[in-house]
Image (cartoon, rainbow over all chains, first blue to last red):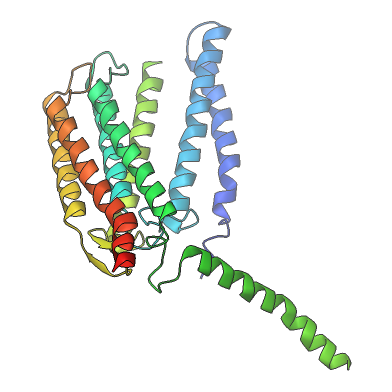
Length: 179
Length: 116
């Protein structure tokens, strides 16, 4: 099975594919779009930027889907379990983003809409709740404990001790073989 | 340039839909864990059902669904639909209840346990 953290061979061809598409766009615009050199430059810049953004976005989505960008702890909090404030911020972020997109698509001519102050307040309340919740979590030794009852400090110390034992392991075995 | 503008919009919308679909798929498949969303830990690290989290979840889902309905009902306008101040105040109150519950479990409960 492929290691999800290793980039796939076909993904490494994406930058070259974008370059090829950009060159095709340059040729097509030069011969098809009427106007002077400045008009051609504007249109070509627009299409090349769009293609770059499209493929960057596509690569990020593929990385998330394959697990290379790990979202498994997107909604987790420090002491284990899911965080309600993170969940709320996720829902409101997607709802506002979709609302913006729908309003822009449906308006004629297309333009960025005015965002009411209440919506900004809503997002601010949600983000502030997340920040305060994180602060309470970080400052409370009770809430930082994982399901085994170990605090994050205890878990870190255990990890450091284990790393020292692994580092000393080969040294002690090599000295015994030389002796 | 009109075609470029429409293609840009399509790209942005497709990316947003793709991201939402992937996040939703990972939540339903369990890769993004939501276990413990409605439970809270007490001073003894025991988990129990949290009414504060439930009321926050209900408020969040109701407000989000109602707002999306308003957006679909007001397509073609140049601004996002406004949100009544009372709804914002209610959400603020809901957040305060949730944070108060969290602060109680973090600071007051250990103190009471220590005094016993």
